[in-house]
Image 1 (tube, rainbow, N blue to C red):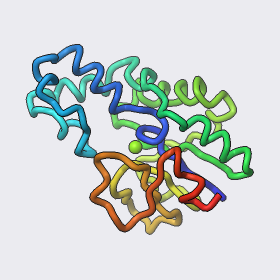
Image 2 (cartoon, rainbow, N blue to C red; image 1 turned 45 degrees about the vertical axis):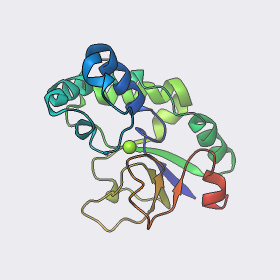
Image 3 (spheres, rainbow, N blue to C red; image 1 turned 90 degrees about the vertical axis):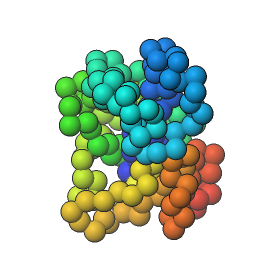
Length: 179
Ligand SMILES: [Mg+2]
């Protein structure tokens, strides 16, 4: 099976890192925050006056490389590969790609090894990429084509309103995918 895995969300914990930075820089705003990301669009989770600062953080050098790996993700990717599946990292880079793209590659090399950098597919529109399944935390993955893959949700607090798709996490993936 060809398994496409989104990078931010399933593998790299962008949410945790963003909360960490915002707590340091805007402690008063963040002290009133539940600490839960309820919206997929990052800026929608925080007071509007922080939106500009959040966009600046996302574009800044070092941000994408600094994401902690999601617990169990590296082991799951290695296990899928061991089971004979062809795994690709299918990631939509920021339009401000200057730091984002090289740091996404460096992140994959750091946690999954240099061979995996040859299996990164940067795509703003993931519907043009072929595969059997796409594991992605985005509630709806849309584009110009009817996708060939099945979108399996990577379970997150901000996508639970989607009830018509299979969902998994790194404890349940084998069972959900029947592997
Ligand atoms: Mg994602």
